[in-house]
Length: 537
Ligand code: FAE
Image (cartoon, rainbow, N blue to C red; front, side):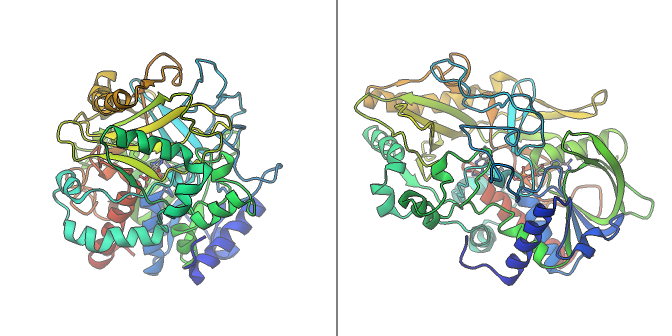
């Protein structure tokens, strides 16, 4: 863990651990605080991912009593096998959000269905939300996406940030909020001497030399994983997590997920309470201007055990691109919040995500031991024709596969739109498979070059059919309530007072790198402004 744990972090971590041990779904610094009636609070934060965690901490620090409402579980207590999370290679019910079978991104090997497993439905940590032309992976639980993601913490190139969000003062972002976000998240870079020598990153070194042969630049990418811990894993003195095939279904050790950083500190203020397994279904406004949330409490089977009405003066939405957009779209379309902007539901993109694998020669093994935590990327973003930033991803199968795997981030100008399906009471993402074509074309241009320079070929057996480029799912949902369109330039929802958006729905579909540092930094900027100017308490 980060060496700079504050007293607040320690208090908050203790509260989370004891709540988990007792199986509580109402969590606060003291049991009394957590169980106090929550039907009227000054501020509510919906969700507990990056944007939500920043909002919770800064509200708590400002002395504002705040309730965080999260639909997923608290992931802090070991199950019967002594582990909080299951691994990627032996997934069980903890892996996925109410599914009968796991739905891993890489679904076959040699076209064999050897990766996914039958599981019993449970509020597991990773969800795959399926829309007609696109599936979106998201984290569920206290910490949102931070529980399941690869921890890659990249600050976007300034020129692209300015292109994407011209209404945001880049000097302040790069001078203050990006450094603050990185510090708070505990971002670090893998020690290069260890990287060069360890078997656990042989796969990244192989991919690097092949990129170099094609004249492409590689860069180290920072991460929130604790690299001291990882080195101890390698030395055999610490329990393996990144080196034990854990990541998309959670890391038992080593990862500085939000429950260890922002959320622990938020709880440690004593002003923040957290309700888990609580799904916000609807938002409306009372005649006195307060917001009223309809919240379904669910149990481990997904059954609704109670429905609460919670009123608050100020509402902060951090339910992610899908969650926040759905709540606001539903509120606008059902007439609950009719003055919301027509821009709600627009400007969505998957950050141009495309996944692909290359087959290496037999004399170029990628290693049966692979760290699940990516630390290197091919940076071809300055290529004016086909900008690509491709994370060199692991394939931690435990056996030699000779596969180099990549998650390419491309500059796709296409945008999707959400519409409200009244019959199902859900938001549906309208994204056609043709809209992914620019992403595939850009990734293909770069990796054709790699293959040509190394006399290698694509793998066609990894994504359930014969495609080389998986363009039908993404890890980086962005947009739906775009900054400066559905909101003002600080995330205040247009049409309403004291209604704020703090998550990835603010970013218009693309940011050129893995997005959570940008989401965190923008949320810090929003909270600084709102707490200075608005009467939120
Ligand atoms: P997010 O973290 O998604 O949190 C939203 C929270 O709200 C979740 O906990 C939901 O359960 C909860 N929620 C939603 N709806 C409701 C509701 N109605 N009521 C109550 N709670 C609700 O939002 N990004 C990187 O920068 N680096 C990486 O290495 C990386 N790897 C990834 C790997 C995977 C497998 C995945 C899935 C994502 C990855 N990402 C990565 C993306 C990153 O995790 C994502 O951009 C952020 O988590 C988004 O942050 P938000 O605050 O928008």
